[in-house]
Length: 262
Image 1 (cartoon, helix red, strand yellow):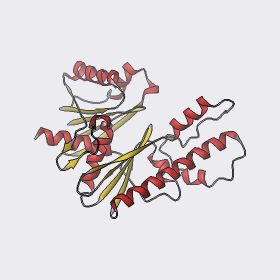
Image 2 (cartoon, one colour):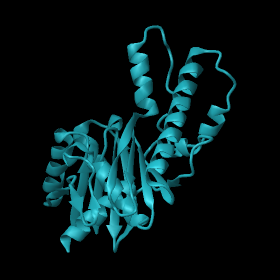
Image 3 (cartoon, rainbow, N blue to C red):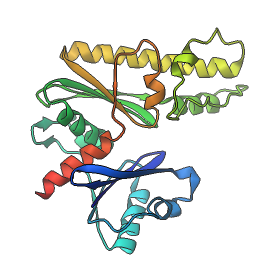
Image 4 (cartoon, rainbow, N blue to C red):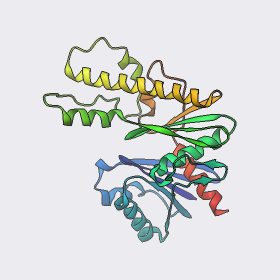
């Protein structure tokens, strides 16, 4: 039994693996508990695994909290993933790979392994909206980063006087509704003007970046998307066809670490 953990900027997720397949999973937002209590709540129902693999993009403090919790409660060390210049046939585009989020690197690996005969555009819809492009030879070509709906909303509201707008419920949820939202009439109040404007901005950015990616690598190119904001994006009209892979980061983490073990 292997436990994989993804410590993001907003949430912590885990997946339990047996014989190469996920058998259980869980997620918790930091806001629900104090940071020191997050892992006790998250892992409350789990038995001791054989190994713990993790990705962490939320800073050294949370990374250390996980390591301390696992050592204290399970007497295990956490094997944290690091971004590499090269993994198997997959070559990283960055001159300094450590600047590339380790969660994005895990998603790149998983995307190429899922579709080895085509180029892949990997979209991770979390606190940021990231795009990574891999050609069918396994070369990572680089990518783009956009602010998410929630990040854009917070920035706009905090930096602008006299705008009173709560984020709409589609901002960071896994419910549908993006299509209905974008078919609204022209907004006649500030809250709707902000919310609709941000969704339209994201829709346009996603469409443009995917078009640029396809021009870069040609066809065939698969577009895959993961993350907490993915389902809202999948309901936007007039965006390219995408495949939803909710466990993409976990799968990349598991692939790399299990192959390193053998």
